[in-house]
Image 1 (cartoon, rainbow, N blue to C red):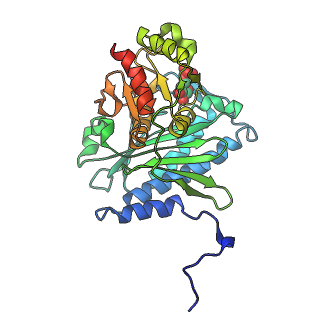
Image 2 (cartoon, protein in one colour):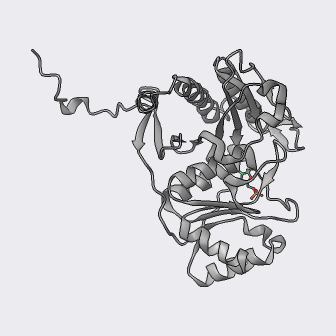
Image 3 (cartoon, protein in one colour):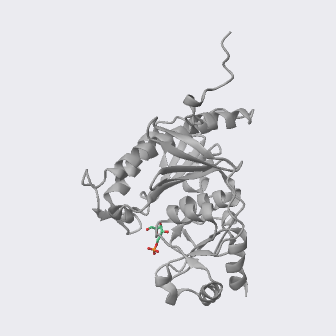
Length: 336
Ligand code: P6P
C-alpha cells in the first residue's frame, strides 16, 4: 500500500482553507447544521469579488463619489454601492438568511421568515473607509451575524436590535497589501489570507491573542479641541509616556493593526459626532467581539460595547478598543 501519511516538501502549500476550517469547527458542534459554513462561504465569495473590484478601481474608473448620499447623508462612493450589491447578491442566495442589514440601506432587507428557513441576520458595512480607496489605503468589509427567532419577520427591526453579546459570529476582510479575513464564531479569533494563486483564503493564525499592552494610540487628533476633557487628559498623559500615534482613518485597517501590534483605537465624542461616529450594530459590535475574543477590551459611551442595548439600527457609538492595559489607561481618565 502507498504510504499516504507522509507529505513531501514539494507539497508544502498552506492548504488549510477557510472552508475546511469552518467545516472542522462545525464538527466540534454536534448541533451544528452546516448553516455557518453556508453563510461564511457566501461572505468569502463576496469579499473575493470585492477585493478584485477594489484592486481594479482605478483601471475600471470606478473611483470617487457616485453622486448621491446614503440614508445618513454621507456621500456614497461608487465602490460602496458595488460592494453592497455584491454582498447582497451572494448572501441573498443563501436560503438560511432571513434578514440583511447594510450601512448603505436605511431599512433591513427581510428575505425569508423563520418558517421559510430564515434563521440568521447578517449586518454589514460593505466597504468601510471607502473614501480612502482613491489613494490605495486599506479598506474593508465588516460583518456581524445574529440568530433570528421565530416570528422575526413580524417584529421587523425589533427582531435584530440585540446587544452585541448576542452575536454568533463576527469578522472583517481587510483589502490592504494582502486580503485578510479575520473571523470569530465565539471560539477565539482566526486569521486567513487570500492566496491568489489558488483563489482561497488560507489559515495563517489560530486563536489570535492581542498584546496585553503596547504604547500605540490611534485617534484623529485633528478633532482634539472638541474631545471631552478626559480624552484630552489621556492624550497629554500618553504624550508624556512616550506613546506613538498611528492613525490610518480606515477603521478596519486601524483595528487590524491594533489586534496584531496592540495599542488602543479610539473614536471619541466630537462636536460633529457627539455620540461617536462609528456605527454600533455593524462596526463597533463585530469589532468588539473580535477584540474581546482575542483577549482585549472594547468600551463605548456607557461601559462595555457588547452590552449596549440598541435603540435603532444605525445608531452610533463611541469606541475605545484594543489591548486590555491600554483600554484601562483611557478608562482611568474617563472615570476620573
Ligand atoms: P475621521 C471611514 O470614513 C470611517 O467610517 C472609519 O473607517 C474610520 O475609522 C473613521 O470613519 C475615520 O473618521 O473622522 O477620523 O475621518
